[in-house]
Length: 204
Image 1 (tube, rainbow, N blue to C red):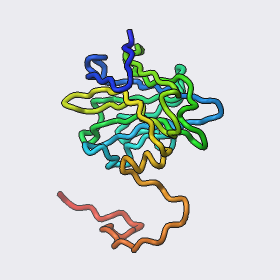
Image 2: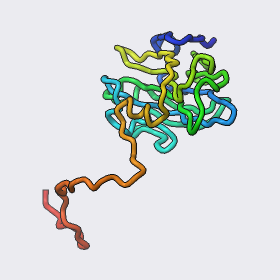
Image 3: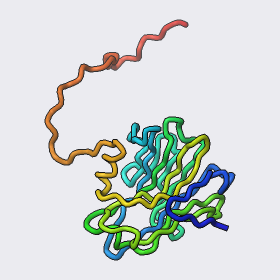
């Protein structure tokens, strides 16, 4: 039986399930709106110190595949696979977010949720509705965070900016569309010269 969380509820993941290979589903929709659903892998200072742990449509998995974007399925707008025991030690929090792509605001969304499924069974669900928000363009839905053990928190916190503002909030870099001024060229690093012939073999 899935536990129903309210905003602000927290629990040890081990109290919800003994599983560490988890499915996270997000359901969010509003007439005429499209959403970007992402996961930020944050360090102990709640910053995106490694941008390979910003999991979204253009980067669907982390290097060791501990966090993977799976796409829409099973009634969820977007879903993730999170393998907790493969997450590197530098990543202390996973923040699941939804942002509106284009005009609109979070007060327009219908009933939605973030849920955790282990072994095919839903173990926890945090449901929300647009009435909880006003003009925000993004929402932090829920977090996995490491505090001696992995825990889950239902966050439900609106955020005024869109995905770009959220990325900056977490200390990430936004790729500039326009031409940036040329940076001074860094000195080249060490590299052996290119050669057509095979390198000489050394006796060990």
